[in-house]
View: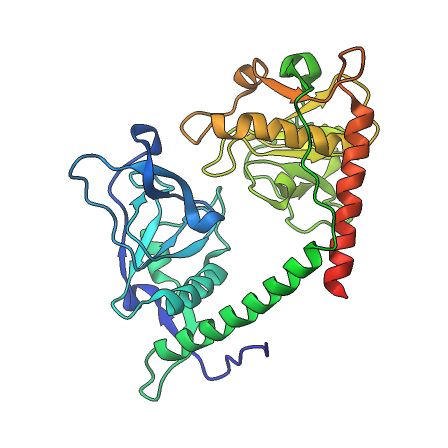
Length: 357
């Protein structure tokens, strides 16, 4: 599809185009599981954290709107009514316009996300700052937002994506699908396999306003993990002289609106900030593939057990267990883990090669 031409587009202030609202105060912990989407400040799955049962006579947030996360600017079009997370600083922001529909809603959500992605957990937006943001949009002959063009563009894009997915499914058939058999695995207590590292900053005058760079360079070269969802948990790059660091560790996010319970393998030398911690296998692990296997097993075991309101602290995590493949002596089979990850890596590379062909 050809790059979109924005030369004739014009800027509009969000609050001039939309009615800007926040949801009623509500937290997922006060609800039972159900079939109504609970939309929070997430940057995946259309912002839907889980599905809940509304309270008796509770008024849902109306669909046909755009939700925006104040944490990172993630924006999504919500077609149906939903329960929105409200009542706190990370409460989502709701944008309503009578001309919205499914297709131009997707278009506008993408534009808004591009403008608002500058926000971060340490520098969150709010209802007023989002409302004051400017977005550039196509216009009609009267100089007003051209909702018809947006709708047409997204319909054409949908067709293009559908064709690409067909090609992807064809490529997948060239690969080998194999479900891992865990029936003979054993459960291991996490504290028996890992230890938490107590890494510190080396400068006594260090504080949360230290100078960091989000772009790795010669001076700022040490990855620093924190409450970062995606990007392997790395939020900044710092100077090695300012931090203690360690290699072949696993990063666990203890506190974050969305990232709580995220687990990432960190084979390289890594430092840690205040909303995450690093653990290290007690066994000597030399293969980063084994580290990735362990990180995946850990996240599967703990991610759904914690939330923004229930921090993923080590005192709780270490008492939990994870299932792992075992040797004949009932010890964790790290050799099997490495071979399995090599299989996954090789199969993925084959799929990508076939897709490229």
